[in-house]
Image (cartoon, one colour):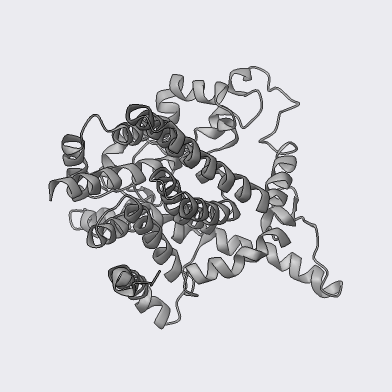
Length: 430
């Protein structure tokens, strides 16, 4: 069969566009030699000093323990490196087109969502639009600036993982299994189990949606083949990352995420059977009314920074109070979280198109309801201590939920659902 390059030419143009956008966005600071002041990355540099000193003193041998993080920690948890995943190093770099840091973070995010929308048979221009909408959600730039790079990587690989699942259920069994296996492996290799765990919500509900569709269309055999392909891909992803997953599992038993041997007097209600304390899990809970930031970014003031740094506010400030520095003592953020680097903002236009999508996508379509349920479910969970009965249920009865903190970060699922439904509605409307 002759390969038709002209057929994929529009896709090539879109990939080139993503590369251009990513480079242009970071062109000014990178060309001037600047780098982001990423807190977590800076902390990691400090930890590596001890590792480097050990290597220098022991002929390049890597230490297995460092004392400069928490009360001490094994190095395989700080920078996991196993031979089993080295086979994917070339694949990962090729997927990034060997772009430099910062640039490939955004490029990979756009490309991944583009692959997903193309798997759903979106036209190229609309898939490209959706890719930009997903990648330029405010949260991604917040976590890049914070240095949460493993989280960035995991989120970049999740949409193409789901794309592979979709291809399987569209009866492209071999292609779907390969795509799912590659990106599921890279996703788990990114080493942010929390993000992968949260997106199981969508993935499992999509499987249920395709099952409903298969029953209606009497295509259970095809459903079985597709599910088997996905299962094979999942097993491959886990096996290639087995060393890291197993060591993380074993190490977690001896950390605060394991079963506690102590119970604080008078605070037993804060304890969980096997996991973090409830107050720690829900410390960063999104406010119920704070969810309006999806539409209005600064509805709670914006990022936690001195009010004196807000130029708009300072235009109305009392000059005398400014001189004595009173405004520097107050933060412009006044939401429910202890602090934040910025709001989860989806965009007014995206929210409008989301509402359009809810109206024009047929109610009979099970995938619509899989997405809506996952979005509503994760929104409620993001409220944490502000909706404690619901959160308590998940902490007590849903496996592994009590292992993760900062429940507000589950809003990444909402950030996936809203633009997807928005673009789906636009696709049907135009």
